[in-house]
Length: 273
Image (cartoon, rainbow, N blue to C red):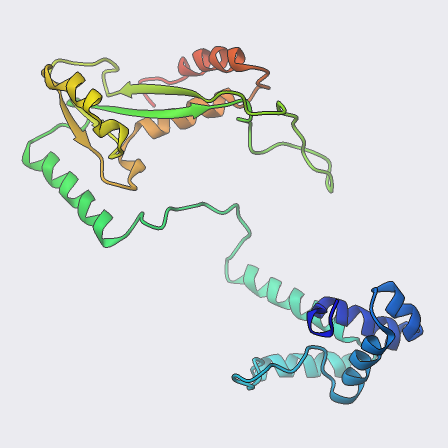
């Protein structure tokens, strides 16, 4: 590593090895695969300037520590004069962690939301969608049939499992995903396609293709496209979620097992759902 590319963590560790553990500079240099002169420079800079990181090149040189931070560090050093910079940093990290918990934040799995989900354009599309339903006196439960597609493959698996503390919960899957199996489904309150139904579907290229339009134009049905980035307006998403949850509970060996599990899972969807 060049002097500029040595991480802050590595600098802390080698300073700790030399100053606190008394390890000779040459041995520390060999341990971290650095030149002895580099280790010597880092340690001297810390001893003389109480600084671990390189000086920033230009820019705002004001301290990022406020008075509370400084007081916390001062009290920690006064209580334990022998405390190392590494220990101070860890103590500060723990304090920050406790505070984050106190104000109600917890660590959670991130929910990924598309960037365009709540833009002005998308919100306008939703308003127009609702206005159309209201103006045409459409009953969203009885008049609309909701249509969508979802995919299955051999890597579909439950996302949570149990294991002893400190050990990962492991579930083996097939070496490759295999062919994707796509399922297209349609639902409404009554479960069947009625005369003069409105077919609600995603506002995507496939559903706007001529083959789809021609399939509907000679019938008594109409198409109603959902606004962009608005899957929550299609209740079939909840149906797919329940089906996928049931399919993923058992190990999927091949495509036939996906289809068999799908047949079983579909039967778990009830009118109450």
